[in-house]
Image (cartoon, rainbow, N blue to C red; front, side, top):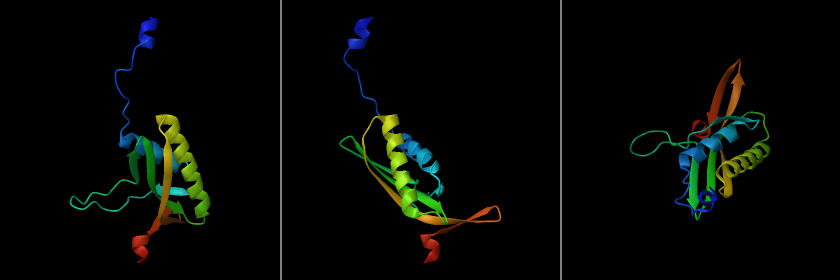
Length: 126
């Protein structure tokens, strides 16, 4: 029975970027002040929206770009710092892989009007 535990590892544990993205989204949405995840724009060619999280893995280290809409009235630097802290902690805890950077991109502000949400993004203001 002890031979099973001492046997050499027969493969690697590969965690997909989609799993890391899902963990990131879940952690970011738990932060007070985050209204929603924001798409990063539109892919050229197929016209589908690009996901709200970009995962870059290099030499076993993870860099995350997280795109969010925040509620109006929140203090943006404080919310972004909390998103960075929570996302880094959750991803590292669940994957056991080091997260070197969490870049938070605020894409829009959400104003609540009589039970509805109205989002204002950079592209609408221009």
